[in-house]
Length: 598
Image 1: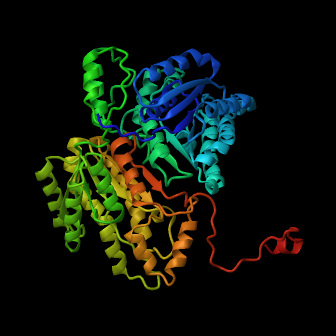
Image 2: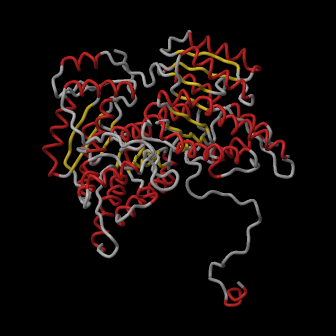
Image 3: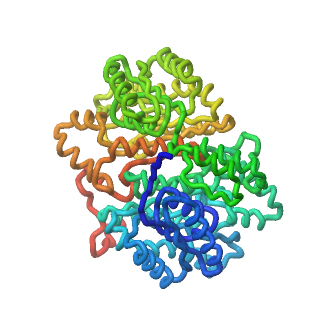
């Protein structure tokens, strides 16, 4: 069986690693070849040791080592780090997952209750990071903090928990800024309504647990709970592939934060609490896992089912095998990197450009077909400003491959004209290329994507999130793409189609090179742009392609989400002003006269 490990021989620490999300993270890292030290309080020691034995006997390529650690105890944390270094000699990744919640109203909560939750959920993150960083700086490693959607949008009767998880997200950004000079990336992942023992306890505390569970499902556009494994795959992405992400908060929420009110228009899904005991259901579950994730590197076959073992041995390690993908603007830069990565992962990719790029497109097709990659590439001429061309692109794909699983709307162009020089026609032309093309390709692709419960990924831009100088047409066009992503995610959730967006920052590509060439001093612009990232460099098209692949193949509980791949450019304060400094408050304070004037 082909072996393709995504985190081989890396050393990771996972706190709270014996249940739910933490356990799923431990398993995924071990499955991908990592050496994982995981912990719990002493009361979970027996369970932790059993998990260690299970993983060591599973045949997975990584290693698992259990250590008792109460993350509320500073000396325990220091011992956890020391044991890891003594055992493996280095540290590449810290996952701060340990956490808990209490349901209370402000009338009932005490200062001590609040402090207890902050101690467990926030102070533990601070201390594990503090004692890990001397080793993470040596490996240029990364930290991933597990937060919650409640820390972003709030939640009822969870005052302490909401505050603690908001603090974790802010701590992530602050630490990303401080550690960027050492090459350490710091990100957070924010799940929502993931079926775990923690959520089960929350439901059981309500007067009607079954009603609470159904309500929890209805909060998501996707009409179901997420799984710990879906969160673990997000953590793996940030650790292994998200190498141009820092200070970023990855939402794995099923679209719970998108739009107004109750979200789901789909029938309630059978919950994870339903029993699965028969061998048939185990085999079906395996097939679903392989279909969803495209690979199987490790099987823990507790049932001793020989047929299950044989099925597992036939699984490949490809992440998108046999899936059919369309990529617009696929002959250069980010688009070409996306095409290449999908073909490398076993997909059948139809990619396009205008007729002027046909010779290049055909050469790329030949090169990929001769490369030995397991997927396929097929080039088609298509000007996405032409509706008939778009219809033909979809038709050719269906005639050739019979279905469609993923559409990547990558085509786009840039314009750096100040408002004095921009015309209405310039603005309309850019909107036509960057936005209307997304609308039309989605419109004509959706009848087929609904059949496969596929997904759409639109390429936005950080400029569409925070704005950019002299981008009066480009920034609104990308802002429109991001907003359209959320709107379409809402509308298509009832059909099981996920719609997400990737917003790159400064990625060195032909588009960026073109933008730079239009400036009076290209070299100065290049150097200034490098400094805009916390990471002090440009991103690469491949880093964006890996984000697209994650959303397509593994981000199965993400919809309406914008994955920002920016090197931390949007995090913290920067030098923005181009005006002369204004008279400010004096160091010694403001006089009474000046106060009165103000």
